[in-house]
Image (tube, rainbow, N blue to C red; front, side, top):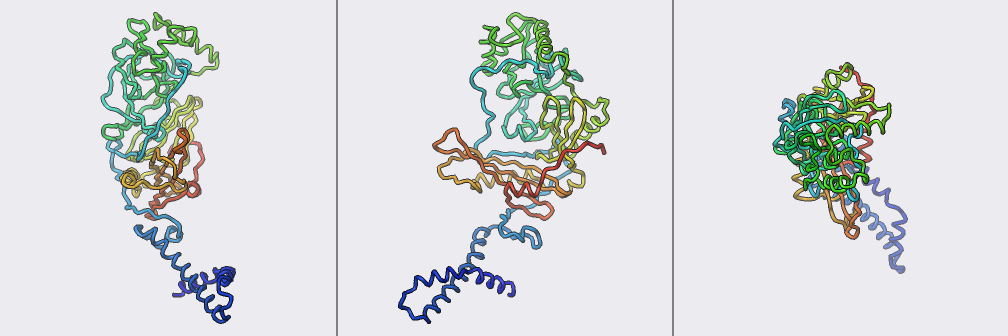
Length: 489
């Protein structure tokens, strides 16, 4: 009762005398003074009651279906927090990686597009300083896969796997006898019909890399290095694969209807070699092409060129060996190679399909190793929640009722995409789950213009709560950690 009296007192104090005087100005001028005072008091009391009703009834209207925040938690002390109705979902940390079936992202509406190359064909740059091998097809894998990384899941690409046997290493170090070649499903052709291939590749995976089997949505560790096209991402149709039959260049691979740019290469640059910079011409043997490739390396790099190398468990650097042992798949904490540049290989840890903030970077030139300073240990797995299931639940909820963006005025706008992503963060020894929500709208009168809005649901696994937070609140609660030098355990 005392607390209520204090609130009423505060409400009365907040009523400005200016409002009372303005109310008095609307009273009839001939009204007796005593009646003026009575009406002014009534107005003040009515304003006070209205103020109290607004502070009590309106929040109830917006939170009528939400559970009360636990007493004593930070959420119960903040009236403006939007508490999310959810049930804690414990993650079974006894499952092996190949039995995990989590997904870290989903499109409710629309999809993402990586865009299409337009205009003139790109400059042909076979090699580009990457791995080059003479190889032949051993096996075409029957399943379709996706790369196990947020960056690639976002573009929702599907890939086919081809097992290759290395006949000769033209450029690169530590190449194994066999490797896996990753090619977009839309560009897949059976390359086993050719005697062998000259392949220019950029490494995207080392031993124990991870892929997601699209047939059963399960994570599969792979025991061979994985490579994809060196130039232009995953586009072998842009000239990174050259086919040979009877030791002579076979241009039929580029003329496949699926390989639009490959067809342009064949039609334009093979008809008029002086217009492009192909290292192969009609009638060339494989030895002719290899010589042309070495000439190009010498032209571009002179004496400063260092061949790329595949880091392996046979490395003489003990720190690198410790890292490779550490990132091998293990119970519910598996690493995927997030990205590869010319100089660095980057590993990111995933838990049941969802990314974390534990990242390890290996410098391929100096073999220096750094990491984010965050490591997920066995104790973290005991009470961690399954963000993949939280994501699935939100997907079902949003399919029934599309949520409105918190900051955008959507009048005269068309919803192009609603995208969700789940991840984990560890701060001060505490594990948090984050569900990111992205809206993309297009102005109805502006076809090539779009606007985005974001919201985040923060799952606090220590306070058994979840709430919506803004990007600013999320950054303040979960600051990023700096990279530090790796120290093997």
